[in-house]
Length: 227
Image 1 (cartoon, rainbow, N blue to C red):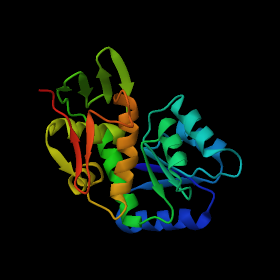
Image 2 (cartoon, rainbow, N blue to C red):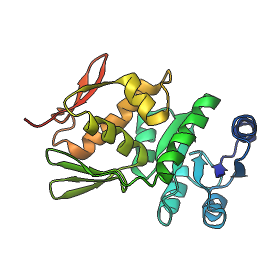
Image 3 (cartoon, rainbow, N blue to C red):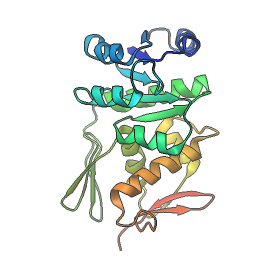
Image 4 (cartoon, one colour):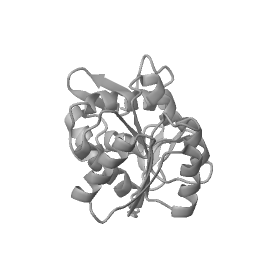
């Protein structure tokens, strides 16, 4: 297991390194403070996951993300001080699989990394799920809506898969968070809200007036099951 962290804050790198040493000692951690070097390391080191900061001294983290996605499907988790939802959504649009905002909880980072690598390495040949016009293949994360093909990140795919498996039933925030990240965290409901908004933008005709993925305020989400 190899993790690449592209981060210019030495304190963050040291904290992450120490956390791995204590909680996941078999992991080989490689780091760089430069974005361009990070892209090169993805090619040369072939990491199992990348932890990417958006604020780098030589180039934008978004540009690094774009360059990596041009040749690699390695799981990428953004670790950033930018808490604005527009920044987070931009990162997801450019191919990040998950994100965390600094300051972060060390154990939550470990759990999210485990969840991403588990989904990336899963070889289960699961049957596609069908709900109305939506057809989702968990093995490829490919979603089709009628004739339209829609690409999802690993985290988006995990959320939609669980909603489709429970179509017509309300899935609570805590249950969905546990399914996606292994356990519920204090900020998991806010994170889910961002991902649900992203999914609605991809599958709803009017994302502001959803008819497919509904919110049950204070409880969770429901994927409408066609009658």
